[in-house]
Image (tube, rainbow, N blue to C red; front, top):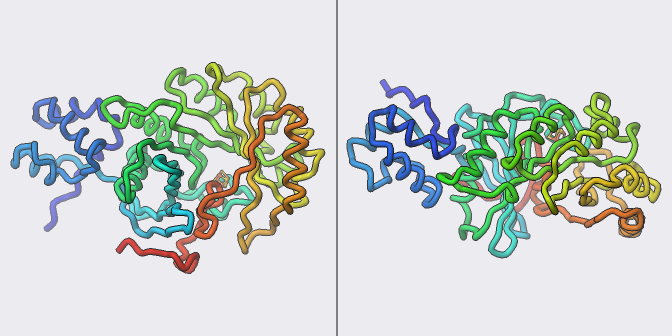
Length: 359
Ligand code: SF4
């Protein structure tokens, strides 16, 4: 009979608590620091390969705990070098994550839930039901899986919570992961390198605001300038309309020079008129904000079209003219369905000729 799998995934706790965890198991506390160094500095997750641990400790520890990032089930490589991953959790579900390199840096787009319950009409994940929220360890594990699969380790990594799921619908898992990523005994990243993107769950936003110095950056998926259109695109708007969302954002104690990012996917004939741009300027007036305009990345099964270039330019000009700081952003990895916020819901190996199996 196989030995039962260890129940403790060390990744569910910040690395600075691994000293205490190993102490509980009967090892000297400094061994916790050694394990953390293997995991976060060298990308080694198997105790057996941690050669500065005594042999009997390696065997013993493997029966008590694990460092268990999700496995790479499949990767899709884009012509722009972005990689979309299907990662298999310990529970066997698949979640998506995207690795986007830019020079010596990389941005990782990671998931916070398996599926999602918010049913935004422009999002394929929205067609799935929520299966469950991911634990902090399963979220941090996505970062480790992607970094250890990178061709060249990036010099700097940013993480955005824009994959499957609504991060603020999983506050314990997401806050646990944010704290673990910031932990000096682990990756030790600053709040600047972590962005949580939300559809605008107002009470949870307030809770995020109370995190103080630990609070990550915030991005809001806005996508409309009126409640009528936003409620059509994003049903959660019926519960938390735009005015409530903006009021909650005004209450957050923003740091000096920090700005909240608004994501605005431009959909032809839906939210791309010059009047929309003007209304947007009015709505966000006084907030430390920047707006990312994302021309829609067509998906066959969805009833939306991308505005033509003139409409995109006109919208941008109007928004700039109404005082907004605006950038047009084109999605990375469009050929592999990797656009953040538009991740494919289904495991679809036909999605790209550049599909590479991890097996
Ligand atoms: S956009 Fe985000 S919140 Fe909306 S359905 Fe997709 S994953 Fe869920």
